Length: 541
Figure 1 (tube, rainbow, N blue to C red):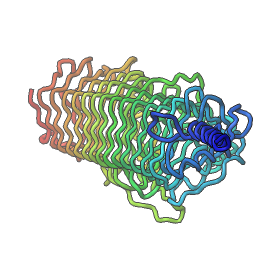
Figure 2 (tube, one colour):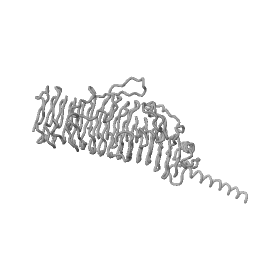
Figure 3 (cartoon, rainbow, N blue to C red):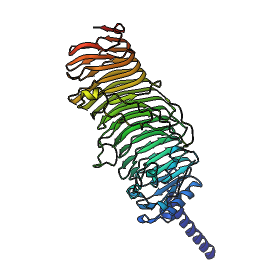
Figure 4 (tube, one colour):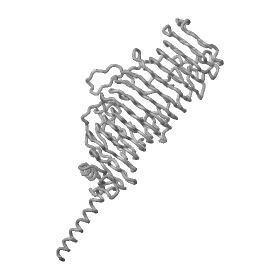
């Protein structure tokens, strides 16, 4: 009996040891999924010894049945980690996953799905391709130490090489990144390429250590929710791209606060596959807290920037409830014809279609003196765009010479809101558009302004209701039409003395109807240039 009892006690001791060891590694009572603690796979967490192998071992072990890999309090130096299906990587409170400063610790990865960026973007701290149901969650920190990867050349594409992302997910289904602090990427902070069902929530991003320091890039992804995020970046903040033939569609961006020296929300730096069904709402754009800049402007270049320059279709974009403070250009819409392709030897695609965009409930202050552009191309107009309840305060200071500038088309120019220089309107310059509606637009300037508030060139079917704008006695008119057909202008108000309400130019301008406008501070209702058919201009008091 004693011998049996002894064996029983030995067995119990062994069982107890295994229970404690495995239980601590795979989870404790009350947790919904097993937990693998990286410490139990040999991770040191002192910020000096490379922990890549230990953390990857925990991920691989967890992937066999699914669960959570926990990075506990400490600083864990690592190179590339490969996230597996059904694995959640948790960076716990007080924990920092620290990117190695040696490029040799980041194996090169060119994904199976080809994209324009394959030419230069090959490295990342956390990488997943073709995986399902993966997640990275906080509340800890990921720090890429990106300032340790200098830009070695200024020529494209060499200047983009040899700098790792922090996150790159490619062709994954079911991606969740939540409640993380993200710092100091050598390149973009996070890139999601051709993924489905993506949720990015509660992220706090600060990225000011290198060139191309975007906050996030959503690229050819579908069914994406971005919510409750805060970001401050040197380069673009929330960026939607299409660098493959796959469109970005069904994307909701809401309840975020962003700052950028470049663009707060930008769609279309690359637009090969196009964009469809995208909603941006409840957004605050404010100046960056970072005291220096690598690129852009201290207050930012653009607020809401929607562009399509590489073919494809942009269709069904809504923007609402946005507060913008700082960027030079609060709103910029552009259809161009650069024609970038995935492979260099592919034929250039035809110009795309830009249509069905609604932007409303926007208040912007601190705007510069460039103005806002809505610019298509000859024979390729921007279509079905509605702007409503927009209030923008501009810097002002434009001259009569600025008002008379003839702006180049620049069909293949890089799509940036300052691409045309100072516009001929201080408020909105609209060229090559069809079926446009501007309703309740309030424009003001801080210093004297000799440009019109609104210039429209080659625009068909224009509804302009409730414009309230500051003018100048030195300016010819508050509004200038050239090549405008079928325009209804009603309920507008001139709030400062000006020579004329509307200047109508060009023999292609016709069917202009002015109705119910408050023109007490305008010297004339309109002035017509040479060749204008005045019989096609109708006015009603």
